[in-house]
Image 1 (cartoon, rainbow, N blue to C red):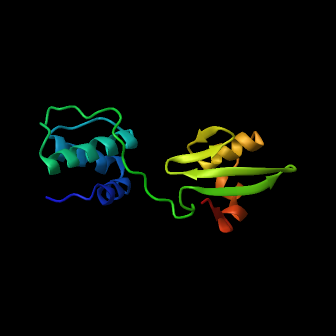
Image 2 (cartoon, rainbow, N blue to C red; image 1 turned 90 degrees about the horizontal axis):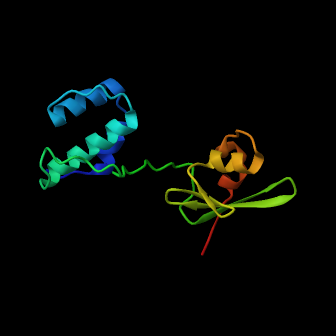
Length: 140
């Protein structure tokens, strides 16, 4: 059985928590009361991959650091791109990373977290950087 984990995870992301619980029971042979979507997706993806590759026993616990591929956000430019915009007389520069955004020597998980660090208040990151996202420049 060939498994495309990215496609499978994308499919899992569209399921309700109830459907994820049902899929969990099908794959693990036992029910779960878990309602944490992220946990369910990680465990199901791990189990699907283990079954496809055939190298783990059903009793081998999944590692806690299982990394589920994050869906690509098509609103963002590719990693390495520098987003630049003026804010209160200063030029703000943020680098798009594979798993986050670099700003002022720190890595943030989302553009909204960067916007909050810059403005000091909750701000939608896509709106804050909207003009920059439309006219981004890539680094060499």
